[in-house]
Image (cartoon, helix red, strand yellow):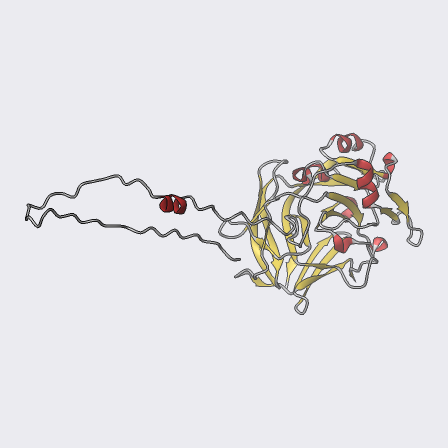
Length: 346
């Protein structure tokens, strides 16, 4: 990253005076104030360089995405939901634990707003605090249990749900139900009006490799009924994403799902007072406070700590020196992992 330095040079003018060739005793040099000449004044007031305007998203480091609307869409990630549609377009993808040892995805869109995303699934109590720092975004989901719905409606976002008869949903009957609900983000944004735009979340992006760390060709995160793998692709310079034993793909185009940066955020997991109709208890990920974790990028794993003072503050991911950990520009995956169960890195 280049730096701009400005240098101002001043000329020191010395004046010597004599009187008629007489020899006089040396005297102390007088102290005089000199009025600046016009040229000196002009030099002293040279304009500072104009600040460089950002050209990349504060959420992913991708080109564009400057003050663009932010939308979070909850997605299923069981085998029945694979492959997803337009998941590759997301700036950030969160992996959250839910009932029965399963996980769900929460995809953050801003740099690119696709025409169709899915399959969409239900919201959870952890979403409220997790996404509070993004501001009054559009939060898109299929529904929620009755007791949780008032909290979702009262949160600082625009709740967009099929259960609330919101515009911008349809069923893709080429997929099995209930894994076939698709969202239409552009239609949703037109219907809900202005929402929060992308803003500085404290994330730092730099495509230069970070020194240190240890080799990380494969990272495996397991939950009782869910599994995520990130396999280093040296040729592409990113991690290939695998879900539940299958390589993740996208129906919106050829190719596979990839992550430029993977964050493992170890959190305290507690039982919430919510659950599903079958008796499953919803776990709540405690994302306010501090803890440890890992950042995977460039084929290496780096230990980090994370800090978050309040629900309104973004999460800071810090390196061993306490400085923000630099992410590789591109899609970021953040795994909320119970701190009692570690991710295996090989």
